[in-house]
Figure 1 (tube, rainbow, N blue to C red):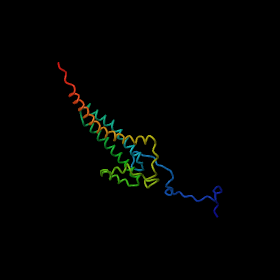
Figure 2: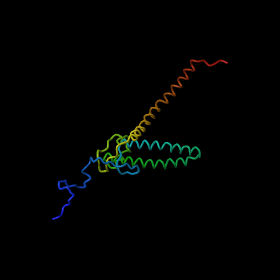
Figure 3: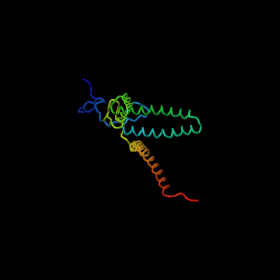
Figure 4: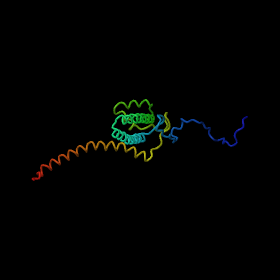
Length: 188
């Protein structure tokens, strides 16, 4: 007869280390920006894309200044190519993580080549709880929520500027023409 552990509770249910039973455990995984593994939520995905785009603007400004100062486009083109390749690799890895959050394989990223299909990554919610690609991403902080709205705000402001600036220029030209008709030129 085997001796029992005297500190063990004889009325305690048996325990087993089974990780896939508890899907709503509340655990989250950390975000890894330079990996295709893991999951990222849609708001964080939008925030990170917006932030990376905003980081590209000064880089391209510096490349333009280098081109203007050296009077040689080769350095600027080299900067554009290197930064563009790094940005492309990073954005594909983020898109793969977003695809994992929806419960799809990373190969579904190829669907983004089809026009308007890439909008799925912005509008489709992720799977609740743990899926085959890992635990859910952490909750979004206030800074992530603010940053996520910066990119759509720039998009809307750009559209409004594209509409308003030509209309304003047309208005100024018509106002100058009307002013020229009302006031006669000064006589010497």
